[in-house]
Image 1 (cartoon, one colour):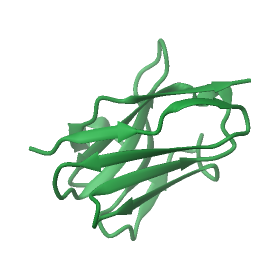
Image 2 (cartoon, one colour):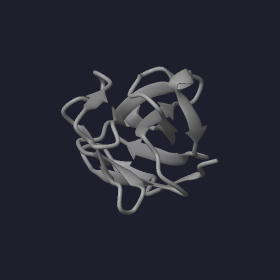
Image 3 (cartoon, rainbow, N blue to C red):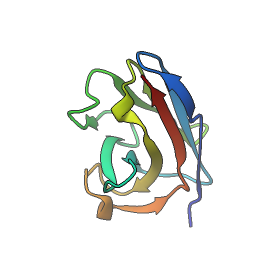
Image 4 (cartoon, rainbow, N blue to C red):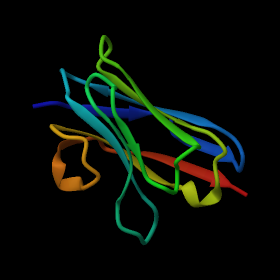
Length: 119
């Protein structure tokens, strides 16, 4: 059983930056970030393989967000730049065995961290 704990959420102004972290209690393979805005379904944001040789992003964040990981610390990061009000959501970290964009590919989930972007 792997436990995931997110941190780094908060309030930012449009155009600003935040960095989210997700610490895992053990070794993980592929990891991803998803988000859920009020009244909307949870959606894929970014994913990264264990060796970080492959990443993938949702079109809505491509060029603004960067996913990375430090396996020595069992931690994955999401650097969010040029934030927009529509990025406001609860951000969830997930771990699984493949770098897929579907939620069902991930077995472990964190509790989520709130990101609010003001205009």
